[in-house]
Length: 204
Image (cartoon, rainbow, N blue to C red; front, side, top):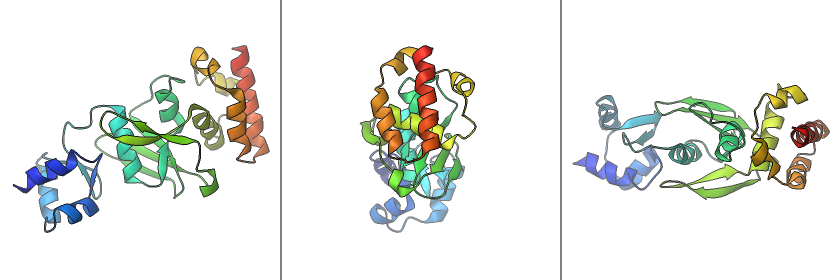
């Protein structure tokens, strides 16, 4: 049964794309995938991307899926800050940065949000091993810089306090590393915001 073939493939990948199917299961028709999706045998995460029901059980599975849905990208902003324990757990969405157009994908699993950055700003992340798959995750400092760079509504000390950063976790970060990451953006206004944040957390 071809569904068994699909299941074997799905166990090896965070999410199965049409390209994966054409390579490993030639001849499987799009109509068959649509029928399986309607009957609940598979879940269409986004057009052309599928997973098995019940196989996505924690946030690291979602992080790995996010990296395959839209490339190149890495998890950052609120999702990364929550992963690193800097802010409380976020709503059921995964936020990433990418070098392509800003995009939002609403899926049955969660909402995948991609914020666009310049290719020269694509740094400050590392590969992490999740429950089943690896994914790219911003460092704590990079996630902070992304937040202040992309969230223009966060500008004052009061705005930063409202983010409810965990003081103990924040105090374990290296301020010089955060400033070094910031300087690579070469944006004086961003450096100013980061300095305000560091001062706010130092006095919190």
